[in-house]
Amino acid sequence: LHLSHFTSPFPSALCDAANHLSQICTKRGKLGACLKTEERTSANDNDKADKYFRDPADFRKRKDAEKTTLAEEAEGNQLIMKLRQQSEDNKEKNDLNVQIRTMQNDASASFGPFDRSVLILNADGKAFTLLENPQAMRLKEQGFIKGKTFVTQPTQEQIDAALSPPQPEGGGGIFGGILGIFGGSE
Image (cartoon, rainbow, N blue to C red; front, side):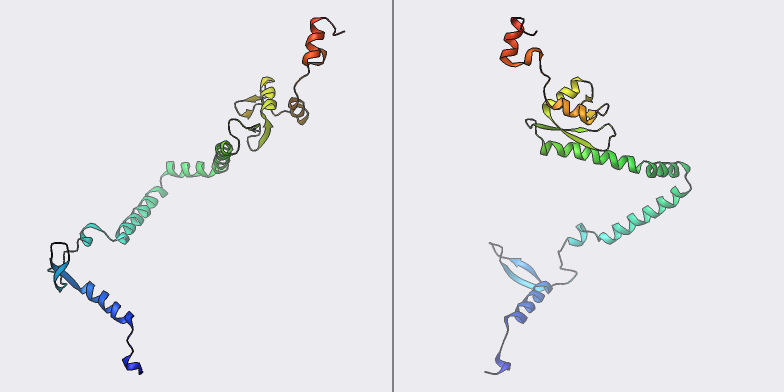
């Protein structure tokens, strides 16, 4: 076996692909098979890609030119300079607002409507406190919470006190009710 007799399928496949790109079908059969091919020329080429697809480099160059023109026009404009300065000044505040809204929106994925816990935004507007639902309702009744935000930040003792329900007179429960009816609260 000599190397001269060895043929690889790859070169012929590449030649067929290159030949296919240089050939164009000029006549097709009833089922769409190509019956007659010719060499591809600009006169018989019916490829519409150039008509419908534009070079993205032209679009990008035009957009870049518009940006530089707008930037040059905006350099001397006092209003635009003032607005840019305001944007820089408010960047920290805006980033904080985005972070808070993101946390509030993500909380619904972690704490559903039937969950035992609720996330409350602290009065400083930067952090959250995780409270049990009954605890949050008691703090809301006391005026500490409006919506899902602390109006005034309660102390840790007040938060802990709201965790357990207040005991009614007479010890609560059935015995407290019976003692309350019969005047046994003395």
